[in-house]
Length: 576
Ligand SMILES: O=P(O)(O)OC[C@H](O)CO
Ligand code: FES
Image (tube, rainbow, N blue to C red; front, side, top):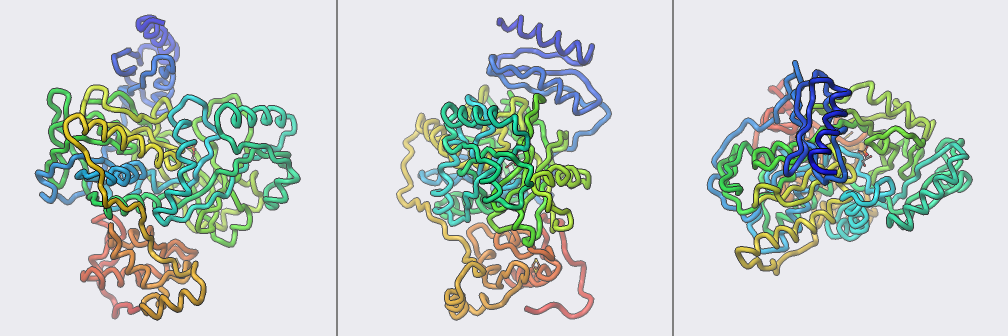
C-alpha cells in the first residue's frame, strides 16, 4: 500500500470515530496523530488505531488533551555545578534496569561512562515498581523485539545473578484454566510456543498434577500451561547490583540529576543541560523510562510516544506464602485485545506473595498513588486463582507506571535524525527479563559507533563479580557467630520482622552507591519491609544513618531531599 493510500485509509477510520477532531500524517520516520480530544482513553484509542506493523513506523501522539494540564516531569530542587563541563564518552539517561545494565556492560571498556538519574536512588520508577518476574516469554508473538530479547534474557539470569550476588529463583509459572474445552486449543498453543516460537519449556500440566504441585490453587482448574523457566528476582536489588558493579569497574552514577534540555546542531547533540551543570557527551543513551519520549524530543528525535499505564501490586505477609509456591494466575481466552498479561500471584525471592498488577491507562507518568479500587479489582480476580487469598494479609502495596509505546514493543535503535543518540525506550514488561540481553546489544552498538572515530580498548581490570551485603538471616548459626565475633554490630538486631542487624545497615551505608536515606537502606537490606512496615525499626535506622553520616537526626530523609522524617526532639533520643 502506498504511503498516500495508507494515510487516506487511516484518516477515514479516524473520521468515523472522532469526526473532525483527529487526523494522521505519514512522515519519514513516524505516523503523527494530531487533533484535540477531551478524554485520555480516546487519545489512546485514536493512536492505537494508527498502529501499522507493515509500515514499521511508530505512532507519535500529538493530540491535545483538552481542559487538562498534563503534569510535567518532577525534577530535583537542588542545583549545583558538580558536573559542569564533564565530557563523558557515554552519557546514560535513566537509572532503571536498562540504564544500570547498560552501564555495567559498557564498563568492560576503557570509557568514561556517566549515568544520570533524576531520582534520589536507582530503580525508583518502573524498574522498582514491578513484580520482579523473570518471564519465559510464552505470551509474546514471534517477531517482536520483546520476544527476541525475552528468550535471550531469560537464559542469562542464572549467570548474571550469580555474578552480581543477587537472589534469583526459577519458581516456574502456571497459567491456569478451568474450562475443559480449552484443553486442545491450549495444547496446540503450547506446541506452537515450544516448536515455533522457541519457548522450549512450554507444556501442559493436568489438574491432578497441578494440585499435587500447588495444592492451594482453586480445585476447579482442569489444566495449566506450565513454564519451568519463569522465575523471580528483586527488581530494584538487581538494578542496584548492576549499577554498583558498573561503579566498581569505573563508571560514574550521579543521582538527583535531571536532564533539562539539549543543544542539537547539525543532527548532533552538542551539550546536555542538567541541574548539576552542562555536559558535553560524545554519545547519549536514552533509557529514561516513561520520559524517554520527552528526552527524544529534547534531542530532536521524537519518532515514538510513550503512553503510561499504571499497575498496582500488593505484598502479603509471609504467613500467606503457603498459598502459592510459584507464579500462578487464572487465565481465560478472550477475543478482546488486551495489553496486559493480566497479573497473578507470585512468590517473591523473599518468600512473600505479591498479588497483581492491574493495568490502567493514564496521562500521568509519575502518579504512583494506589487506589482502593485497584486492590479490590486485583483481589477479586486473583481469588479465582487461590481462594485462600485475603486482603487482610496485605502488609503494603505499590503502584508503578509502564512505559508503553503504542506498538507495545521496545524501541532499541540509533537516533533516526540525531546521530549521537541511542534509544532504549518503550521498555515495559518483560523489560526486567530482557535487560541483560538488551544491554549486550546496546554495548555492541556503542562500541561500533565510538570506534568510527577512535580506538576503544577493553578494560583489562573489568571484574564481573560484585559481592552483595551478607544476609545474616540466611546463615547457619555457626556462620552468624563467626560474623558477630568479627563485628559485634552483626549481633544487634534492628529490624525484628526481617531479622536485619546494625552491621548489615552499616554495610549498606558503605556500599559503592550509598544512599543514606531510610528508603535507600530499606531497598538494600530490607529493614522496614516486614510485617510492621518499619513501625519498630525506622527510628533505629534513622539514628544509625544520622550517626554514620554525622548529621542530626532531623536531617535524615525518607527518600527525596524534601522528605524529612522528624521535625524536632520531644524527649531524649533513641539508642541502639
Ligand atoms: O501487565 P503486564 O503485561 O505489563 O505484565 C506485568 C507483569 O506481571 C510484569 O512482570
Ligand atoms: S521491625 Fe522492621 S519491618 Fe518490622
